[in-house]
Image 1: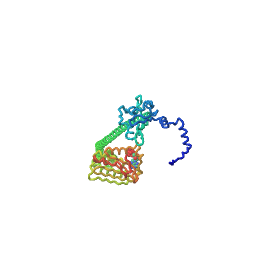
Image 2: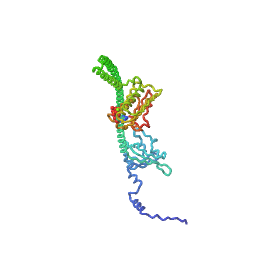
Image 3: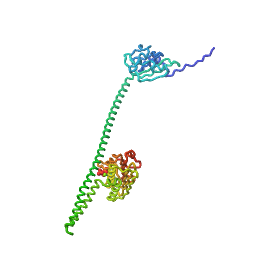
Image 4: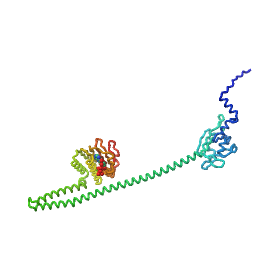
Length: 420
Ligand SMILES: Nc1ncnc2c1ncn2[C@@H]1O[C@H](COP(=O)(O)OP(=O)(O)OP(=O)(O)O)[C@@H](O)[C@H]1O
Ligand SMILES: [Mg+2]
């Protein structure tokens, strides 16, 4: 007699009895089939030939078929034969088939399936191999209609493209406007440089005329007065009058000389820039009574600046010193001028109350802008701001040769001055 092992039947718990209770009803007679039929997604299975072995009602309806019209048919030939662009879709390239041919699942959302009425429906589908033990028996494909999603994507793309278009258009408009602004700035700059040249020429002409015409008249007057003086009885009132008149003529000669020098210092034309800067600085110190340090170092290789650069440098220097006299309330000034083969450097520091950015940007302040523009016109640069030691510092770089402009520093880390 063989002993038979008996196992006590497992006692049905409350959950097991509930499942048994539902299973007894028609509703759960075939749970798998029920699940397939109840889902909104399309699901179908294919065998190794690609023929449909099952399809749920939602899937068939999505494709415009009845279930029985699909079963047994080659699904690629029926619903996946053509690409969205109308070109043929060979079964050999079909990713659904690779699921069971190579055992590789796939998820695709860029293709269409074709309905019974010939219309294409954009879908997202996935295909997974069906395994029977270790053997691949086919594939199960799930798919959903993503027309709405695609439509939204298309609308989004359209809106995005429209936005990109507008941004590109605006950018073009802006760069056109910036280009126009840059051109008109350049034109203004050239006009301003031209006006400076014209003004300088006119000053020279007026200075020459005053010197030649008025100067010679005054000299002739003085000579005639001298002759008259000799004709008068010594000690007479008329002779005294001619003496005082001669004094007035001397004053007029001095005044005319001052006006001529203000218009165009002849030292600039006759002795050059370095002498003119030296002379002007000395005159300035004398006139203002400021304590001053003046150092002019011109290297042996420094070329003599041409007339236009020399005039610009001189006028800039004049304006810097004018500003010190008018605004700084300083007691001392330090002036350095140096030049080498490439460039001219100018640094003026005062010990006054300093300068602020607001003051420099004041609409009525034309002096600093004028100096800066003059320097830029010749490829140079001007920086003005508070000096590290207090007061104001102005620095100017001016190229003396055509290539030197490229070396002019844009920024100077030790220099607290702001470029203007
Ligand atoms: N060395 C300085 N010390 C103090 N403040 C200065 C100095 N240089 C310039 N400033 C300030 O910078 C401002 C701008 O100078 P800028 O030469 O441009 O104009 P301005 O001298 O007032 O008028 P102008 O157009 O007649 O030259 C001045 O008004 C002054 O407030
Ligand atoms: Mg000024």
